[in-house]
Each structure stands twice: as structure tokens, then as C-alpha cells.
Image 1 (cartoon, protein in one colour):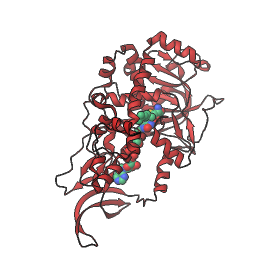
Image 2 (image 1 turned 60 degrees about the horizontal axis):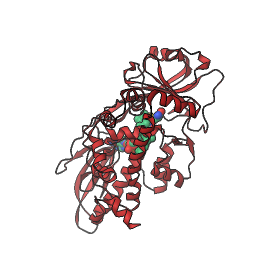
Image 3 (image 1 turned 90 degrees about the vertical axis):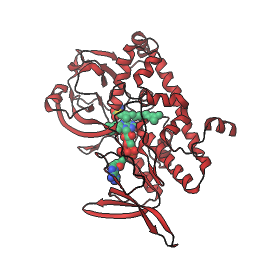
Length: 428
Ligand SMILES: Cc1cc2nc3c(=O)[nH]c(=O)nc-3n(C[C@H](O)[C@H](O)[C@H](O)COP(=O)(O)OP(=O)(O)OC[C@H]3O[C@@H](n4cnc5c(N)ncnc54)[C@H](O)[C@@H]3O)c2cc1C
Ligand SMILES: CC(C)=CCC/C(C)=C/CC/C(C)=C/CSC[C@H](N)C(=O)O
């Protein structure tokens, strides 16, 4: 989003240090990175700040233990254990193995435990693991609200992905994360047609060899013009949802299933102004040093979170400006009214909004959409039902490319292999 000549990430903004596809893309494309903003975070429950970070590591630890015992350490270990298993995907993909469904992919990483996480809420999963109500309400729920705009009733897997954002070392691409997409497109030497796909139809075409062949006709619109092209293989890389991509599949036998995944409505608002810190704390304005405020589920506030942001070119932490006016990024369920903005800010220069149908509305048990929609027609965004993140889309894309290649060439031994982890361990 460009505001007053400066670009800010209004959508996908942070990347985990163990997101190896994104790391490799940035390295191969020669892009630079910026480190995640390291300001102080507080949690507001509608009345008071129930937790506030300290800039001193040791004080932070003492505060966490004082409030929550060793739960935050246990949470760190829980996420680490899941990430450890999740990382197996890079090994499988580097050996060119592919999966024909999101469930099979997850099962190959974490077995029944991962499938169980997909089918249970985060709340159930963490309650079963013995986390306290206080820790869940004051730490976990606010993290789910800032990241996925939802409660702890999301599935356990996306909950773990979301909790991994509490790890240190989050980063972003200098100049904007979109540089990865434009860079990869350029490097692949693809022919990019900037049209909007309207429908896809299976048709029989006679190729130069004289053989009638089944192909896909992709019909798209560029401005007011409608054009079409024929393809052997088609990969759909956008959520199939009438409100988002509106692609119709014509004359397929059997017909392509309809997807009814709801996407969560979220609004990003960027506001440059002076925060009304008294809304959150009775502390004097010049003593208020939080740069991110998360909210609990019962805070009854009209925002999910608010935090200071830097532009995509600022390589350092935002400088405290003399007039104390920062650019703040707010996530809310609805578009903020002027009254609400004036409640949050003592004064402001501008407020720019970007509404999204952001990520699936998670409602376990999750049945993920198929990856193989038809013979040679693949769907990538079903992976978002497990968890939506840039790296998840990169994993889905790599998997779909491998899957299409192996199915085209009849390499059935490279698809849905059981016990891959053990198999590859002994191969070394
Ligand atoms: C507010 C917000 C914050 C987020 N923060 C993070 C974060 O910090 N870190 C992170 O990893 N992830 C984050 N995400 C999630 C991340 O943005 C998504 O997981 C990721 O963008 C999914 O990528 P994708 O390429 O699969 O789909 P998309 O990014 O949805 O891309 C689909 C593309 O298809 C195009 N398209 C749609 N219909 C058609 C059509 N008919 N014809 C042609 N093209 C079409 C769309 O215009 C779009 O460009 C965030 C998302 C939101 C909304
Ligand atoms: C896929 C794995 C293992 C990790 C990815 C972790 C990650 C970076 C998830 C992103 C979650 C998400 C949708 C965040 C949205 S808000 C991000 C940020 N706090 C902001 O203010 O923009």
C-alpha cells in the first residue's frame, strides 16, 4: 500500500526465519531483507494492560514466569516440536516427492498428530496439553487475533503456525515482499498475461500430430476484451471462492466440486498520528513505550491489534519522531469509523484502509479442498485450510509442480509415499 510516497505492507508482512523457500527465493534473487520490528508489546483486555513486555530480557523472563509460570517456555517447546516436524517438507521436496492431498502432505510430516491438530480447535489442543486459562486468554488468544483475526477456535495447526510468529528473527523483504513474486516471474521467463480468468473448460483439440487430445481452454478478460488459450496442464493459484476469484469450470465430467470455504473479513488501516495512549494505560504519554498492543477476545474493543510500522524501505526500527506521530497499522473486523479513529488517536494526519478477505475462516474439523481438481487441473490454495502464510503457498506451489510432473510422466513411486521420513533417513 503506498501512502504519501511511502510503501507499507498491508497484507503478508512477516516471514519466519525457518521459512526456507522464502529464504532461498530472496537469496537466489539477490534481494535484501529487513529484520522484524523489535518494539515492546502489551496486551489489553478492555480495561487494563494485562501484560507488558520489558526491554530487559531478564525482566521479561521474570514477568512471564510471575504471570504464567513456565507456560511460555512450554509453549515455545510445543511450537518448536511442531516446526521440527514441519521442516521435513523441505527434505521431501528436495528429493522431488509430491503429495496428492493436503491431508497426505501433513500426515507425512507429523503423522496422526498433525491430522488431529487439523481436526481439533487450538483451544482443545492446548487445554489438553495443560495450558492454563489465564495464559490462553492473555497470550495465545491475542496472538490469534492479530495474526488470523479469529479466536482460539481455529484449528490447532494454524494455531501453531500463528504462535511461531512469537519467535525471534521474523523478517521481510526490503522494498516489499511482492519483489519475491515479480523476481520469480522474471527469473522463470514465463509469459505473464495480466488478465482475469473467467472460466476454464475441457475441450478436445487435434494437435499437430493429428491425435485428438483433451486440453483446457482458459478464458480470460483483459480490460473489456475476452481472450482464450489452450493448455495441457492448469494450476489454479487463487482461492476458489465466488467473492474472490469467481472462476467457473465448464463442462467437466465429473463436475468440479464447489468450494464453500468462507474467508475472514479483515481491515488493515494505516494511520499516521499521535496515539491516545490513555485509552490503554493511565501512564503519562511520554512514559508510554509500547509499539504493539494486542487485545484479548473479551476486550470488547473495535480493533484486534495496533502496532507501529515502518515503510518497506526503512531498514531500521522506526525512529521516535519529535512530534510522537508514528505510522500505526491497525487490524479490525470492520472498517473504522471516524469516531473510532478519534478515540484511538489524539490527532492524525491520514487514515488509509485496505479491506481483505484475508484467510480461511477456520472451523475444525477441516476437510481441505482437493489438490487434483481434474486430470491435469491442480489447485494450490487448498493448503490455506491448514494454515495461510506466504511459505505455505510456496510449499503448495512446489508440491503442485512436482505432482503435475510426476503424474504426466507416470512416476507413481514419487507420489504419496508412506514413511518418507524413515526412508530418507536411511538413504543418507
Ligand atoms: C492482512 C493480512 C496479513 C497477512 N500477514 C501475513 C504475514 O505476515 N506473513 C505471511 O506469511 N502471510 C501473511 N498473510 C497471508 C498471506 O498473505 C497469504 O497466505 C498469501 O498471500 C497467499 O498467497 P497466494 O499466492 O496463494 O494467494 P494470493 O496472495 O491470494 O494471490 C492470489 C492472486 O490471484 C489473483 N486472482 C484472483 N482471481 C483471479 C482470476 N480470476 N484471474 C486471475 N488472477 C486472479 C489475485 O488478484 C491475487 O493476486 C496475510 C494476509 C493478510 C490478508
Ligand atoms: C509456515 C510457518 C511454519 C510459519 C509462518 C509463520 C508466519 C509468518 C505466519 C503469518 C501469519 C499471519 C497471517 C500473520 C498476519 S499479521 C502479521 C503481522 N503481525 C502484521 O502486523 O502484519
